[in-house]
Image (cartoon, rainbow, N blue to C red; front, top):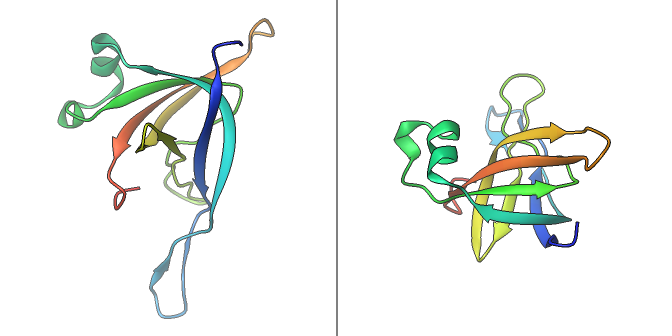
Length: 117
């Protein structure tokens, strides 16, 4: 798709507890993706995000790369983080549209503080 640009995603592997019971965060790698990043409409915002976080900036992302939201359990998955306009956006959802015509992923992300991601 001609409207996509290069963006950086930070992907952190799941962490683990060390021998002293202290949580050790996993390794973070940066990957580059081609994507179209767009603002979220008010209707989308109301459907995707819980009421308590509706004051947070959000974007939608169209890409050929699967992006990962946070997943609890075993194995745990840390959410991917999009670096966009000098801000960090944590992936909330990612849906596959793999029809064979124009296959892609559509993800939603919300802005997070550096210490939250």
